[in-house]
Length: 356
Image 1: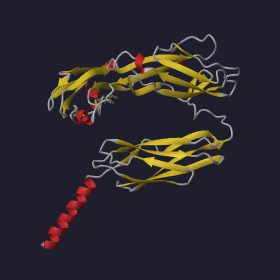
Image 2 (image 1 turned 180 degrees about the vertical axis):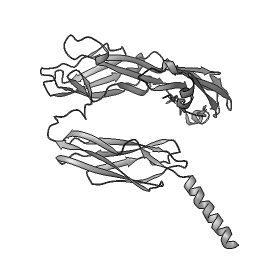
Image 3 (image 1 turned 90 degrees about the vertical axis):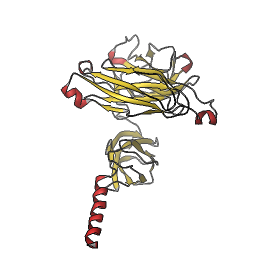
Image 4 (image 1 turned 120 degrees about the vertical axis):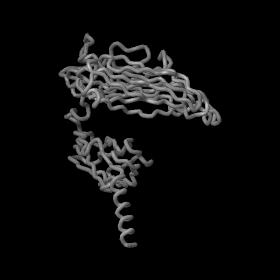
């Protein structure tokens, strides 16, 4: 009898361990750098998602040689949440390379290998990997300028690299600059096959309101070029309230915003209906009133209705999100909502919407 009970308990424990487990998933198994310049270190970042139902812990990350150094998310990754694993490669040896990154975790299997490959060369001649975006005969290493978290008075900068693959000298010029952006180009003129750097500086004092500001600039492909979809570069900047002057006591008594859900999947509902909706409960779990000063929608398919914008401590309200199928469009741009609050730990709250 005792043996039977022990067997049942053991079987129960084993069953529980099978049912509840962390699961490690990476956004890619192999990263291809293409050609990279000798002695110019490069970095690869893998996004790690816990697709299981217990916290995922990355216990160690190793690389296959001393030529690369790894870093990773040290805190437990909750179910459905994401972490990162990064590796920096020193590019000191010429030639083709294939390196591995070993990730040890409490998932099964406990060891997963990811790879990165490429070729170290004296001079880069293939820019398709390092500069994947083309505007005419000019190649760029990014296709948008995004300043995600800026505070009033700050002047963050972004740099992007351009390569002149035309058969004549080229002068990089960004047209239709909004008043809150400044640029610097080095060198001013690029010869055939030459690389240059454009630095874009955000003057946050000239942003008019909290939340997201969007515009576009246009890269001239030649002297006298016109603006159009072919040479458009989107620009976005998010201005946040500045809480740097708050004391520790004020922070301890601050409001705390809590959402019942931040990622919404309406795909199933929209497969059957022309319109879908999802209610999100917003609760102030802090010690002072929570103010939702801004709620922004960036897509004509998405609508949002907020019952209350000021919540007392312990109070909740409903945010209703709706998506109209016919307005999604063919491009299926990123659907999201942006909320600006007076929670010093979460002044920006993003709600992502999936509607395939």
